[in-house]
Length: 268
Image (cartoon, rainbow, N blue to C red; front, side):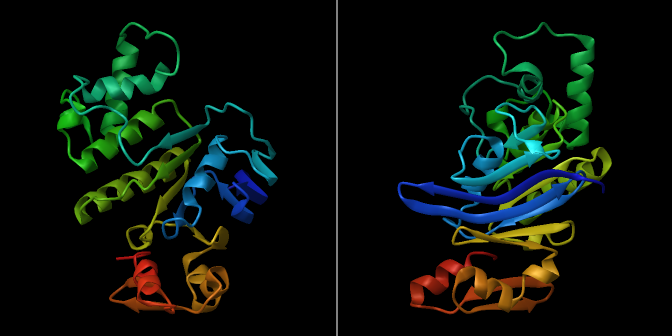
């Protein structure tokens, strides 16, 4: 891996007089797989919006290739948590992926052999070719995620952001999505930043963990960041890190039963 593709320097965000992100600094390189981990309300979605250019920062800088992020940048792809398509719409999988080429423009280009081949190649890359002609609304959650990843990647972005793509998926679907993303990151030199509550499905492929709590981040290798002393500083209270059968559980010392239960949802 060479130079930094994405760099955040001391980024802060205030909304409604409340500090949402504080002094966030991180770097992601081409081909790197980074996990954006933390509980609900920690600031993960705000951080993704900052990188996408949808949320202005109060302080700090967002840099791409060492330069300030432009207002529009086709080099960043995005996969939302939920498919923004009505289930009853008669859109086929290959139509949705094709929209990733020029769906942001007014009007659609006529079909062409090159377009069809590109869509087919992308569906094959994410393991979705067998249901290319199916209606999107008929697919399972894991199948829909594969389609949305293909939709985001067909325009050849260099950075791919994913907002909770593993939410509500079974273990097999989780593993399939993570495997596809890791393979594409390595093969195509795409930087991946994937937000999740549970770090465990990402452990085998994650180069960097960006752990968010209370609007602050700790960044580094998993074995560096997921330590009681590091996370205790991040949460502002004592945190235990429990490792059982190859899985990691992060539990904050309870200020009450409700707080303990919430923090336990960081992982399953």
